[in-house]
Image (tube, rainbow, N blue to C red; front, side, top):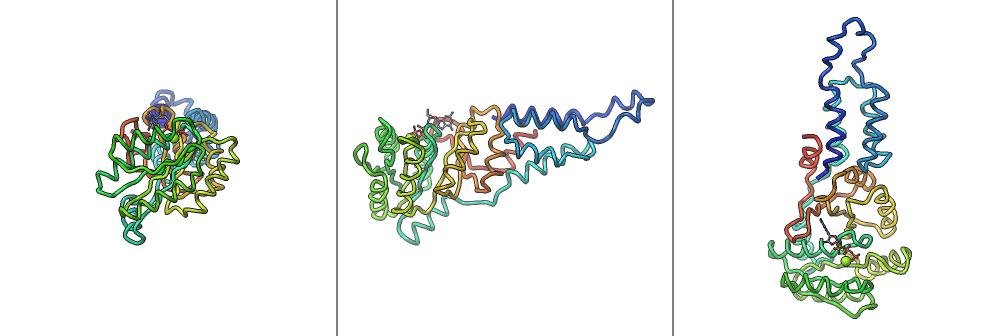
Length: 298
Ligand SMILES: Nc1nc2c(ncn2[C@@H]2O[C@H](COP(=O)(O)OP(=O)(O)OP(=O)(O)O)[C@@H](O)[C@H]2O)c(=O)[nH]1
Ligand SMILES: [Mg+2]
């Protein structure tokens, strides 16, 4: 996980950890500065961009190192990384439990482009809800992609979770509505799947907006594939039209680069709830800023 970003960050910190050369060549001492050079910063910025850190964020990181003493690089980087990924504690299960207490159901809508990992993530969260004894129902809201209803039905069956589904080409807003009615009868949470692709992105956003208008979900979660490079920022902008409360980043187990995590946080300022770390139900990690920084820096 994040091997490439880690190597990049390590590259610059290591470089400045031992100013041994200066001692060996006292005559030339004046030529050596104890500050980080412009050239090093430029190279570091390029490396960050290669690791999928967006240009803006790479610039921000590098700016923080400008005119800093070499020996302070690690500390400055640590602080900046912390600023970039820090977020307030958010107890997802508690949020759901409270909503159910208040209104006898909770509706959570998942969306994101095709293949980002929505359906798999819903199955993982379904499994988590079962463990926490929170009644749960799936809404098969992707009525567009061939086999999408079967895919989520298979998860429902495997996990022993109720599912509400309609016909292919049916209205997803109605599917979610019916699932919500079911959730009220079991005092549970609706995990609503949606399509990742329609005839056009415009259709997709319009359909999502309709689902939101009709069902007023308690939480809207954007699911992003962490392997996506700079396009990830474009995706965020597109789904920003619908608006979202939180994010889930998937496939971090196969993400060597890792920089997208920094850009996403900076761009959205929304909490990342979970990271998808594999294809099994258990492969869902609560987002932990400290842990991420440790992974990158140590
Ligand atoms: N390695 C890994 N694979 C994942 C993860 N999450 C999802 N996948 C895989 O990514 C692929 C797409 O996942 P789906 O859950 O079908 O994605 P989706 O967003 O529902 O896709 P559409 O329904 O086509 O829009 C599947 O092969 C999943 O097994 C993850 O955290 N790690
Ligand atoms: Mg899907």
